[in-house]
Length: 169
Image (cartoon, rainbow, N blue to C red; front, side, top):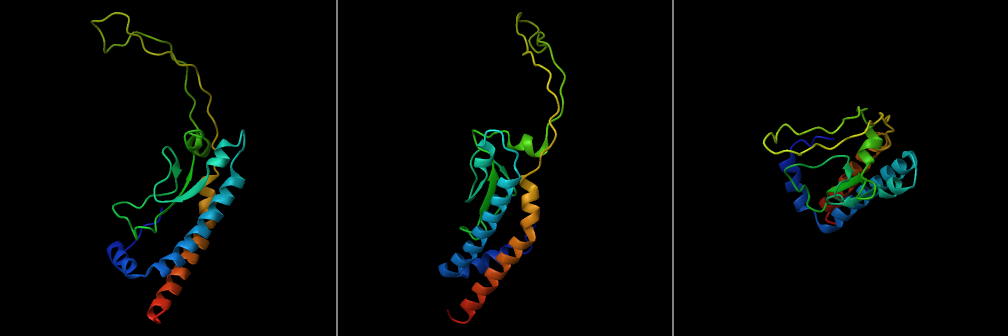
């Protein structure tokens, strides 16, 4: 996740930009997000396709339960200039487990819960053993592969928009 220096100063500058220049910046951000999403969809392991189909991008907040690349905290930087690349949704809730893997756990039999000493018959749930699942990263490698290109494209679009405004266009 990138750290933005002088965030307040950047926000003041973005507020002064006309809508046409913001459209130029948005187009560069959309193109970069499309490239990241396309690579992540190629890298993801496919079983039934639900996880692959859940990878996408949106302006603003991602769907509930999605794995995101990063968040801009304490600010609505540029209001309409917050883009989120995500993977997972209510159908593909296991996106994190595929990306990072899981740890093995032993079976646990049901037993009487010690928190309820005075009542009889309160039992904990029985759990079966679970084998470890190795990580199959697809999301962050796609981001890291496109990070420099995306930053350069957005910087270039911002510079061009600022020059256009300065020239009176």
